[in-house]
Length: 216
Ligand code: AMP
Image (tube, protein in one colour):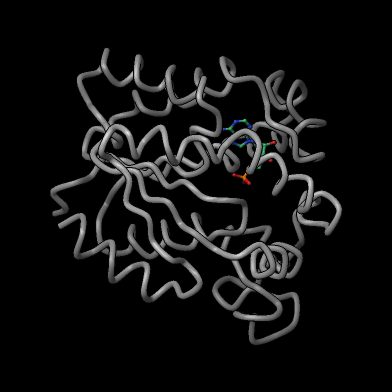
């Protein structure tokens, strides 16, 4: 069991938050709360929230702070999150971080550590534009770095691999800009609270080894 188990993964899109979450979850049963996944699921199901947020998500813009915080709050109240959680892609603004602080204070479940995954822009754009996701099981591949054995087919379940619409070069660049203007200030926010763990994230094995040591 990890000693530090209420975690935030902070990083630009393509920094590897999802991949590192999967590697950590394979060893420790934490709730994986990816706000991007939650929103894509609402969009897929065509719920009112999905309809309200679809255009923003597809264009790489942030959905409103109060709305996303409410979604996270509901997910944190699910029983599996009591044993620890990874917040992947949330918070993304200072306002969201403040709302999260209030929510967690009310639940008496403070954040133990904020992991910042640091990666060069050039590598990020390569990762994003070559990323593929299995439409059946959600497994993540990369045409350049971790390709599936058979082109466009999932190794695990034979599902069809697709590219996220927001991973086109143009939208990926826009998302990176959103990260630098709206999300990067969170690094200092959490450093000031003494919670930040910054990890050089070009190599996922280095990241997971560091996390297993630092969070134990
Ligand atoms: P992700 O899968 O984390 O890259 O998120 C995909 C998209 O979902 C983002 O580009 C935003 O449009 C939206 N999104 C995800 N998380 C948040 C958040 N914390 N705040 C606002 N929008 C978000």
